[in-house]
Length: 476
Ligand SMILES: [Mn+2]
Image 1 (tube, rainbow, N blue to C red):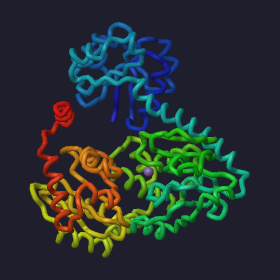
Image 2 (cartoon, rainbow, N blue to C red):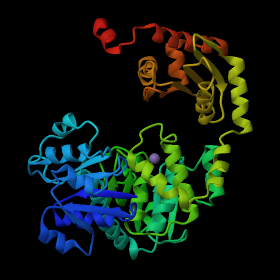
Image 3 (cartoon, rainbow, N blue to C red):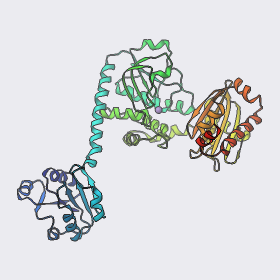
Image 4 (cartoon, rainbow, N blue to C red):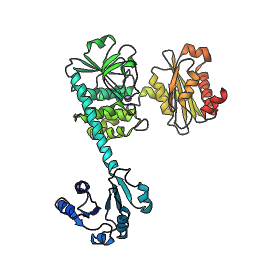
């Protein structure tokens, strides 16, 4: 394959010659200046000619499939060159803009007259790679600083949030590897351990030990880092830490020697992938597998809150990981216990006007309720689910919808905020209400009456006009 390039700048010619050598057997450069042609004779295939004349291209023996790259350095004459190139029969024409955008003519000028021409901006081609490199070196400096700061400590705690999820667990492993520590010199700990079976399964399969820590035991660590969580979460127990790496919105009320908080990232593991890459740290198969699973799970496989960097991290980690192990971890979302609650819900509730509601009565763990709420949303014809149950004398209400209908967070706030805590997003929301306060407001009901009450609440909410704001304005 050959290509022809019309260029008059030495730097551009040298760059293109080097870059295109990989894809083309021959790149012929058409230049106007004899000294330039002579100077570049041994680095590139250079021909002297007038680029504004058709016969220059006829001599170059263009076929319609020969790509022709025309440098636009802002000087006059571009249109005449393009006319000559297309008159000579070329159809794959590229304009490479190297001049500053302000000095160059607007791209539409060229594309209007030559609709088949593709315009490439040199700055846009080079920009992303340069950006990545520069931000990587900033990250590298940051990582090296905290690595040094942690280096001389005897005992390090990597603290996770309560009931650690895959992102927290994998972030713990990743940071431990960045600190070049083992499990005896850098402890991964949590104030409250895991309860959800898929998280316990992940920790088992990847042999991640999460040590229980208490407010009193914090003093026995020389350095403390929190990952996937910020110190304010541990209300008053922790007001100063050495390092925070997190993707939740930045909170006030604590101090940290080092922190890297990026709320636009889909997972903490995405940030830590960049840390590992910045310092060229080897990533073990176990750590890569954990991190890949974490990114997948925190972004619901890129369905929520995903950033291009999450995909980058995924692409980087994938070849280092063990995908068979990930499939194994995913299978464990289904357990006999959870299926029992699904059966209980299908007996207690039914689908009415695309809404599935069920009250499960006493429930051993909260995740049985959220699991059932997610499960019934998979049914054809179901657009909303509301599952409720009582855990330790507290009513847990879990609401899901397909996201394009009315706001689930709005629903729980309006229904339960006056008797408990309620909140969430458009597609998933939760309310937590002490049973005594619930009874005060709604009375003492049996299970069937509870299901009926919830169904009526959702139905009424969905019957209202879709524009919440208009509705509220009218109410005022
Ligand atoms: Mn997370």
